[in-house]
Amino acid sequence: MAGGATADPPLLDLHQHTHYNGRSDTELLAHQAFHRVTTTVLLPGDGWMLSVLGDNASCAALQAEYPERFVRFACANVAESRTPDVLRGNLRRGALGIGELKFHVSVDSPEMLRVYALAAEVGVPVLIHFEYVTYDTGLERFEAVLRAHPKVNFIGHAQTWWGNISAELNPLEMYPKGPVKPGGSHRPAARGLRQCLWRSLGRGGPDPSRRQHSVWRPPVLHLVNCLATGNLKQQSSLGFAEGYRLP
Picture: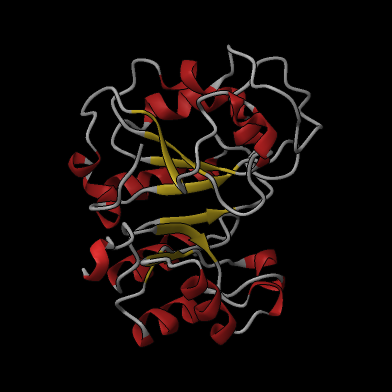
């Protein structure tokens, strides 16, 4: 390039929403362009989430208009009997994963287990919003979920997920400050498992003051543990992320 300048490396934003708090598509496009995002993963909502962000249809429409800039996941209210049909239909129409799942259920509830079964069947990742006593509760039992679903790639997200990289966490403190203490629950949860366990550093992420520990690094998608393959490109259900530089 002229003057010896080098192009920016491709940047994947794994966590964006349409119509977030009333934001227009034009504003979203401008925001992503300002931050030089190469590819954006749109995460739709369903159920109560539609009061805050856009649905499957709005994500599909924006992707159709700008296919070079957006890909999308699929979402359905896990408490409803139609959920597998809604998810399967959207996956057949081009969604690349399931999420964001942010509902008032436990992570090992029957409602969530049928979603994991579908993800294993179709071969797509699942992005879960963990928030103590509110959404997808029971992180301490997530290891059993992982062991029961070895073919599924899970992407962990939100306050309780981030906070538990540290030991001695007060679960009521959504954004803890200070250094990360060794012994958090993530590594034991992933130990000995075949699938990849990922952490999404999305909106409202970790307190920058905690970056003195090596685990707080800038990328949007951070590999926590991948014992079987150790290579992003070997993870077929995360193929949308190929070519993006990760730590």
